[in-house]
Image (cartoon, rainbow, N blue to C red; front, side, top):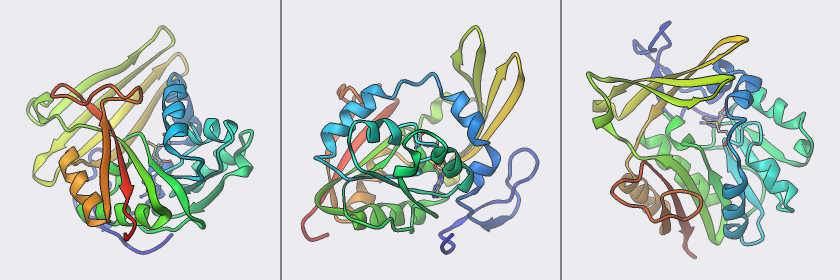
Amino acid sequence: MGGIPGTRRRADPLFRREATLAFDPSEYGRRIPADVYDEAYAHLDPETAVNRLMALADGGPLCEFGIGTGRLALPLLERGLRVAGVEGSPEMVDRLRAKPGGNQVEVAVGDFAHTRAPGEFGLVLLAFNTIFALPDQAAQVACFRNAAAHLRPGGRFVIEAWVPDPGAFRAGGALRPIRVAPDAVLLEAAELHPAEQRMTTTKVRLTDDGVHLLPANHRYAWPAELDLMAQLAGMTRESRWADWTARPFTDDSREHITVYRRGAGA
Ligand SMILES: C[S@@+](CC[C@H](N)C(=O)[O-])C[C@H]1O[C@@H](n2cnc3c(N)ncnc32)[C@H](O)[C@@H]1O
């Protein structure tokens, strides 16, 4: 599983704050079962993202960091793109493999801050806020460098992430509905630690079958900090949009899709 790229807070039963331990890239998948992950996000339609990525991939191949159970990778594969991935959770990879086409995706199991998937790629993708799963700035910079190392000159690194919004937190905490449907409700309880740019969240999925908790740690960063990380890795920003339809990114945007390109000498 590679070296020790950073530290995270020890898992206490609720907020995992006390001591520091080595970062473990398989933790996400151990805490959130892969089938629960798929059910929780089954309502998301990947079509718009897949259309945009097909255009940006320039023929591919594409490598997805944190490929998970293939929510985006499998539709991209179906559209004829060669797809590989890096993933920290063997459980997520098992679920990907069990799906149609899953065996055609070569996945390197390890930390995407350091683990190298074989080959040279036209696009590296880091979707769904997963850059923030890394525990600190140093690990995120290493991830940008690792993305650049996977790209051919001129290749693209595409990041999808939320824009930090500390104003949404009262007394350090926030609770918000993500999805309210007749058969399922998804809520997110969050606690902010601004001094370290960290947020701990537990999503709560409620259905007739019961309650599932989906906990995660985030080291968040504003878009400008991500741009600097790209510069350190020899990449420059090509585009920033508010969503996969390429709506302009504005003062009100709460998330962004950012496209970086690797320079010839990176
Ligand atoms: C939010 S899920 C996104 C999965 C998929 N990309 C999607 O869009 O549905 C994050 C994924 O990244 C993986 N992950 C988190 N941190 C990682 C790390 N440092 N190295 C490798 N994989 C990691 C998790 O196991 C999980 O599968």
